[in-house]
Amino acid sequence: MRLRELFALPTLSRRTIEVWRRNAKVFMKTYRVNFIPPVVEPILYLAALGFGLGLFVKEIEGVSYAKFIAPALIGITIMNASFFECTYASFVRMYFQRTFDAIMATPLNVDEVIAGEMLWGATRSVISTSIMLAVITVFGLATYPFALLAIPFAFVGGLMFAAFGMCFTAITPRIDSLNYPTSLFVTPMFLVSGTFFPLSALPSGVQTFANLFVPLVPVVKIARAITLGRLELDLLLSLVWILAVAGVFFIIAVNIMKKRLIV
Amino acid sequence: MWNQARANPLADIIKAENLTKDYGDLVAVKGINFTVKEAEVFGFLGPNGAGKTTTMHMIQCVSPKTSGKLEVAGLDVSKEPREIKRIIGVAPQETNLDPDFTVIENLLVYARYFGISPKGAQERAEKLLEFFQLGGKRDTAIDKLSGGMKKRLLLARSMLNDPKILILDEPTVGLDPQARHLIWDLIGKMKKQGITIILTTHYMEEAAVLCDKIVIMNNGEILAEGSPRELVARFVAKSVIEVKNSALALDCLKDSKDRIQTEIAGENLHIFTNEPKETLELLVNACGVQSTTVRDSSLEDVFLKLTGRMLRE
Image (tube, rainbow over all chains, first blue to last red):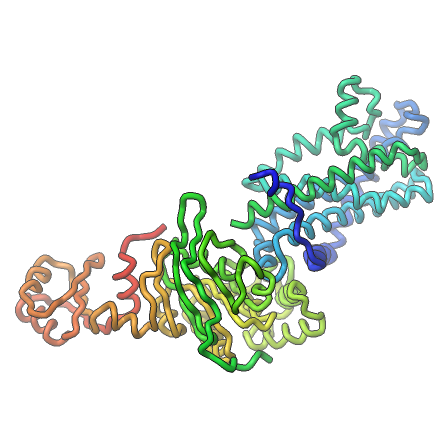
């Protein structure tokens, strides 16, 4: 694949939203099931880690352990919701259900199908984040009004992980192969992105690497700043990083998917 | 509810010139030429791997051509895919109905992709369900439908956008005879509404019943083109006598004055002849052949003659 093809700008019309609407309609049909993870997971994590393990942990960065990990749970949910939507769920729609083929036989094009899928992935992040934020609020771990910024931020962060997910979906031969990015990309990030312990606990070389290249790091950083109400100017740098990476991988995802689907 | 028959039924609606498609080293379609006229039922016949589905995909603008010319309703497939897709309805070979939705939801959601208003979609979907005899299944989940119902729902979905051209890829494959005949009946009704229908099939009987014109494809090439009747008349003799394949019968036919063509089909010998009575007498009296069947030759005979009996997998 030539570089020019890899970075070609997608051709999108407002019909892109119809792909999003299709997925939203399916989601609403089974909304009870879909709401379980974002409600239950933070309760479990906060109970076990925040209030259980937290008894043995000193304050970190001036806050209790529960307050330290609550925003990380938001960062993780932003990652998981969109990444899993655009890997396993998109793969099922593409490969087993042939939903993409069906849509591509209408005036929509492949760019719009893939873009719509990623926009929907980002939306899943927004939905999960909103629910999680409510739970965290009940535990008294969020600072308002700043915490509300987590909701629009979830869309931006979600779009980045949706794009990563879609890139993996485009190159995966079978659904089982998606276990590789899950175990080698998502799980390590989940553990060491300043989520359950501060980055400063890592060796300085690893810290630098994490700050420069690990996508969950800026997401957790911003989520934490928002939830604790500690906004600082250098967060803008993290936001720009996320926007740039999201944009680039969004375009790459569309183009490698096109390569896979248009033969 | 549908457009009336077009004013000029003889206008060309699809034109392919030297149309070629290759996948790397594999040439799937090798420079074919054909013209489909408006309101015609046009059939693509051929064994697996002949290039039928690839050709369908190029017409419906989901697979780009490698070279040659392909125009649909006067539009170039590589320049105006959206416009073309707007006027085409497609019922694919393998079902891609949306299993996350019920029957009616499948139609309503699909209508959005064409930009049909919710109200218009609702009306049209209800009418289509009636027409395709799915009214009672309106709120049923897709996985509860029989094979025939799924095919009918695919047909209903392909009609949502009031298409000028319908592409039906193997519309009755895997169905029982009752379901098949119902679909033939429905395709006949759609044809009467003036829609141009392009279909691919393995079933010769289907092609003979439905198609005004047929092309027979093999290995990416068009081997023959014409109406079913013309093709039978052109390529095979009027009648076929089937006898047990024996050296005796073959040997004996050599002496016949008629130019008789024979073909070995498994355990049987097919003898093509325009003089079935004389040939039969010869076989029974002079050659001592006992059990025989005489029948009119069919499109299937043409197909097997042109594409060979080799198994395609």
